[in-house]
Structure formats: structure tokens, C-alpha cells
Image (cartoon, rainbow, N blue to C red; front, side, top):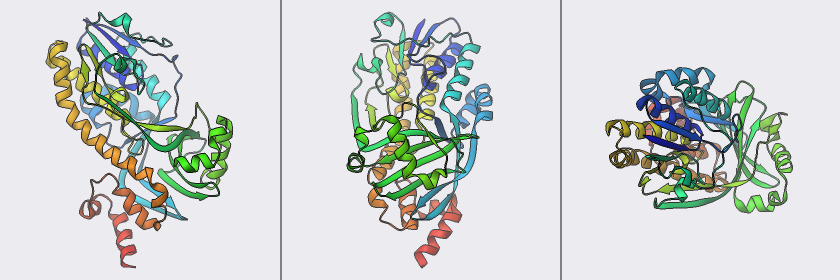
Length: 374
């Protein structure tokens, strides 16, 4: 059996590793356009239980990753001079480059040789392979080569991804009313001395602030000034930090012939819920499980993969899309008091009520009840 994995991000490296363990005689090619040890972005965040799937399915990889993660409890909402902690929520984060390095080591440990620095214009070189896996992101050439019922819709808000040379205690949402308009920063540490720092605003504010005509460096300096009180003198770090619109992507069909999609080539989940990398790696586990159950019969495995995995992912993506819509209007939510905004924020995905919040976040609910009473 010959398998081509197009895209050597976390999903591609991990599915290649799992396939090699399951099918020791298969030829497995992992092809990645970027050179080794080169990536864009900064940290990757998970819920503190998000890697539990690795603990049970792949304890070796779990043991390799966890020691390199930063972990904390609670998230913080910072608005109008008030910081509100929301308890009962734990997180873990790791640098994207470090995660890629660890997964590359896992792939090499089973004899795979990822082909880094190999950009592809199409997948014609792999048309006679038994299975072609598209793990090549939102602009997937595998997806473009088939018929998957793709729906791609960019959201209207603008965001830009920086790093910050300071660690933050928790994942924090810092909302700021500035001379240029209303902005939000999502920030969390992923290493002892580094944090991810995502700046977001609506399109009208972005345009009025002049970001369209700024260089990457000018944007970096301007965002430093907008969030000077949050950064406390720490610099922002750019790494292909260009303003973008988040791409809301979904595919009704997950496979076409011998081609199959996973991760961001298949679906996106808004960064406000921090599930994209987890979903991609779980897609890989589900695909390999389907292949194993079908004894390597691709024609049986791919429909089984879609049938088992799609309903699970769909629920998470629906919640992510609701979260994204809340952020699309965050400037309006900033008109609320800090406690009312925090209440709106924690319920934004539509999956939580007072009773559940009292169990999950008792300290937050005690503060919210006091605010309501007042």
C-alpha cells in the first residue's frame, strides 16, 4: 500500500506516524512545503483535558509532549478596568514549532522521512497511490483537486497573530477602548518567557486606524501602543504577522475516491475555542482506526471515517462558529458592564446555563450572583 500525506503540520505528521505503526509494510510519504524548523504563528492552546485522547490511545506521544507544555487554571476577562477570573477552566499550551519538532521525532522514530521544503502545485505525482491524505491546511491542493462540497466563508473581523516576550498567568481576553477604536487581545503563555498575542478588531475600525497601509513592523508597533498597559513594556514579536479574516471552512463530503481530508483542510474552528490542533490530531486517529478496522481497504475505510467522525466534529464546529459570531460583535458587548460582559462571554457558544456554571465555575458564579443582587 502506498500512502501520500500532503502537508506536514501536526495533523500530517501525526497521521503518518499512526499509519506507520498500523501498516508496517506500507510506503508512506509525508510532503511539507515549508523547510524543517520553520513555521508561522507562535503557541498552540488546548483545554487541560484535550490531550487525554493521547493518554489512552498513544501514551508514548503523550509522554513526549506534556513535559513541554505550560499549564494553568482559570481564564481572565479584562474589561473597563476590571479583571474577572472565570474558574473551573484549565488550559495547556505549547509552542507550535516545538510541537512540530516533537511530532517529527515521533515520525522518524518509526522510520518515516518527512520531505520538508517540498512545495507542490498539484498532486499529479501521487495519483497512482492507494490513499492521498490532505492535511495541507485551508488552501489545500488536495481539496482543490476533488469534489468535497466545500463551503468557505471569511468572517468580517480582522485579526493579526503576534508573540509577546512576557508570560501571562492565564489565558486572558483584554478588551480596550482606544483612540483608534475598540480592540481585543487574546493572549496566553506557551513557554516560560513567551506568549501568543492575537489582536482583533472590526473591519471599520481596522480601516479607520490605517492598518491597510501599514507595514508588518508598523502594525506591530501600533499594536504595542494600543496594548501598552497589558504588555507592561514587553515587545510584540512578528512572524509573518499579517492582518487576516478568519476563514470559516466546512466540507460536506470528507473523501473523494482515494482522497481524504483532515484538520484545517477539512474544517476550521475559530481560535477563540482553541480546538483546531486537537481536532486535526483526532481526525488522524479516527482515520487510522477506520483504516485498521477495514484491513487497509480504502473504499471501506473512508466512508466509515466520515460516518464516525463527522457528527462529533460538527458539534464542536457549530459551537466554535457561535463563539466566532460573539467576537464579530465584541465592540457592542464592550458596552456592557464587566460582569455582564463576562456572563455573555462565557455563554457565547450556547452550551451552558446557570446550573452548569455553578458546578463548573462556583467562584465566578458567586461573583456574578453578587453583581446581580447589587
